[in-house]
Length: 463
Ligand code: 4AD
Ligand code: MG
Image (cartoon, rainbow, N blue to C red):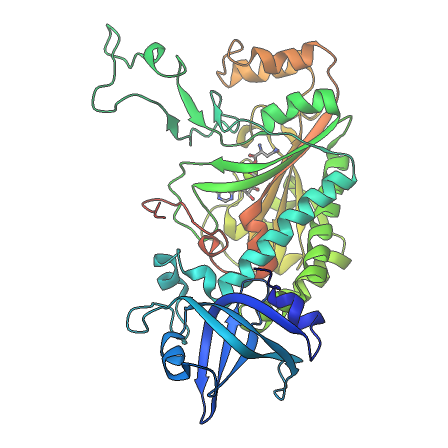
């Protein structure tokens, strides 16, 4: 059975061509001697209009089974469309219904459903216009990411999902075990006897592939990871997931400046690629979801990102013509409201904040000469807040050891990480992009749970 994708028929189909298409019925409109179906196969926002004439054999029965949601293969001939919404439509010669969808129970009827409701039917919601557009754009973003790095000679490194360390040191890990939790083996002192667990020690789902990416960068110079990461933060917000995808480039012989330049070029590349590849979906987001979606994309592509130090950011927040819920004070982390003020109100474009206080950042970040700050950078985006977090890494063995001791981290557990500093150490830097936050940024979708097919969040792991 060779059939053509609808996007191909809409773009290149010519009247007179005989063709076959497969898809799901979105709408049906019955007139006196014929009926219109809109059929969608996920290849584009727009479906193809199919005309069914009443002279088709078994017409009445066919129409009954062709309700919204039914799956069909239609053979017919393309004709120039009378309607103004499409160039061609398909005049059906035969229709095969694979599966009907009872209109009494099929949840996706032709009306607007709330995103909250759609989350409860995540097995069906991809068939809606909005989620369809989101997942096509998500796919285009993935392709653009690989394209960006591959064309620059970066190696895609596959880092492990099960790890023993806590890269970010925030203690937000999910444990991985093969113990029967009802009968966990205990040592004599009643502590859990991990020597009898699957790996012989405590293991977790990774919060970041960075440390292993650093290993790979010390052999391949420039690498990136792109995979799932897990955080057991109990944050029920529109920007947090328990399972999210992260892109983490790591570059040897690179400093913070080079890291920021790459991150900025990277975001611009993705926006450009999505505008070029998904113009119809982006127009849809602009019209239905966020009226500034396309203007935002243009700003990202054409404007330079602002760059300020954390110390300057604190000064700006202190003289902001408004109040904040959380305190602004040198040494405290920036809260979402602070990040959004900087990106949305002060700069009105993405802003890169650098050189954070040593006390609020992870152990691996390079200590600056002032010994109070580290060579860190966060990119803050309008409507999103932090979208990228990165840093230059501490490549000096003695400084790193000092830092780890101060933070109570076992030198033995991280001996392999320290080895990278013992044998052929180089300045290096990298960053992590939250992939779902990127898709939110591109589409303007308000809730992160609506840009990943099967969201995992506190008390929510269905499908
Ligand atoms: O800032 P983070 O914690 O940085 C790291 O993990 C570094 N190891 C990255 C690196 O330098 N290689 O996380 C990176 C990004 C954040 O900026 C944010 O966009 C996203 O990951 N992120 C989340 N996205 C969704 N849900 C969550 N719970 C997230 N936590 C972080
Ligand atoms: Mg961060």
